[in-house]
Length: 212
Image 1 (cartoon, one colour):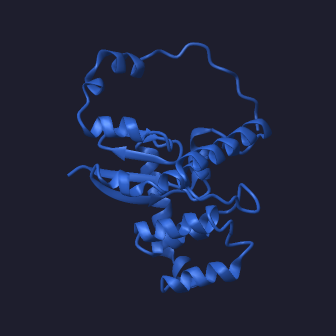
Image 2 (tube, helix red, strand yellow; image 1 turned 90 degrees about the vertical axis):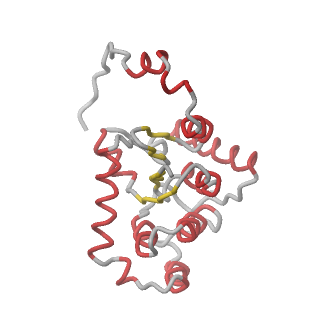
Image 3 (cartoon, one colour; image 1 turned 120 degrees about the vertical axis):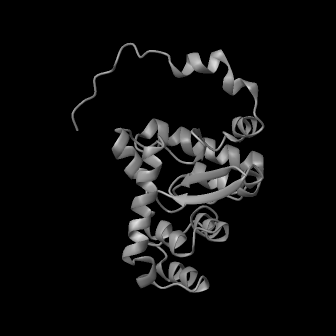
């Protein structure tokens, strides 16, 4: 059975949208949910998040609302974005990275519209529901696991979330289900000359980046 590693951060509304399809993802193999800090990926690859400049921010959240509406996925935006996702990521890890915990973390933010910082009592109640304490989610092994998942993701070329990694392939974005299904079905496209040409296309001009 193929192993599917699903890299996610609860800060991403697109990861939330795909999290509501985890059962569909799991039909392609053994699904392993792996929390990562999206900001760490951005820093490593020298990128910026879609919510970090106004024009893209507006279009991003409009698309999220559209996809959620079209797919019948409940959606309530949190009070602010970006926010600190680390407590929720550590909660998932301390819970064993189960799909139940993943759903609980995402729905805390994207269905209830809550954040650990703005709703600390509700977050404490969530921890209690899973038999956890603040001390447990902040334990050194949990912190290290989050760092390790991030380094693993970077080694595999994961630059954004959500991303599903299967063998040596990565499938990025909440809309990647179709191509992932094709890969798992051994679609001949993945042995095609066109794909090889796409992968070997030389880079031409390079834009100069301003110093931070």
